[in-house]
Image (cartoon, rainbow, N blue to C red; front, side):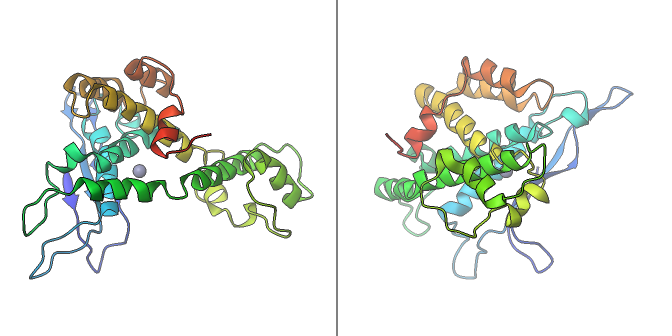
Amino acid sequence: IYTDFFPRDSKRPGAWMTEFRSEEITPEGEHIRPHVTIVMNFTKPTATRPSLLAPYEVETFLHEFGHALHGLFAATKYASLSGTNVLRDFVELPSQFNENYLTEKDFLDGFARHYQTGEPIPAELVDRIVAVSRFGAAYACLRQLNFGLIDMAWHSITSPVDDPEAFECEAGAPVAMFAHIPGSVIGSTFSHIFAGGYAAGYYSYKWAEVLDADAFAKFKENGIFDRATAESFRTCILMRGGTEDPDQLYRRFRGQDPSITALLARDSITE
Ligand SMILES: [Zn+2]
């Protein structure tokens, strides 16, 4: 694994994981291990201060490291099915799963210490990070569902749509919260679903959240550092890449279908 953490003039912003070389078994039988890189744009250290990461930066690291593990643990024959080469609505499971550790005190105590006093991060501060993550969570959830429904509606049409506004209102009706603002249409500026590769796949953002929360719930039950659960996650999901249907991989790990219960609990959404 190659890590590239800090900004440079020649570097684009953002964070990502990619492979310099994919895992493969050559025709001669040589097993090539993947060469994975994770790239960030973290706050740089200065002459007087080390690099002090904000919670969202740690979350980004956890996210990309989850993708990296998916790549590094790959144990498949063909590069096209190895590591993160999975269906779009499954690729963010390992990355978003990892983000769950951001608010686990036992995890943070392993490294999150005050850089001058050595004090571990106070529980009260962790609670506040959780509280902030829950602010507006129900609104954000319905907003994502609305985008997902509109995306699927546009990509399911079989004849031209004469009134895009009415069309979108109907598609989003199940999750509508506010009165429609006349003249507003989402599709005309929704580049994600027409030019961004997410056509009929926008739902995968929310679906990945369902899976990552549900998967982490098993760790919460067994212990977030439980070796057997971690081994199961590795062998059932991280090693398998796209060699099997995600449904089967997930059920093998979880022992049951995913449910939305854990996600709603994490976001503190109740009826
Ligand atoms: Zn990702």
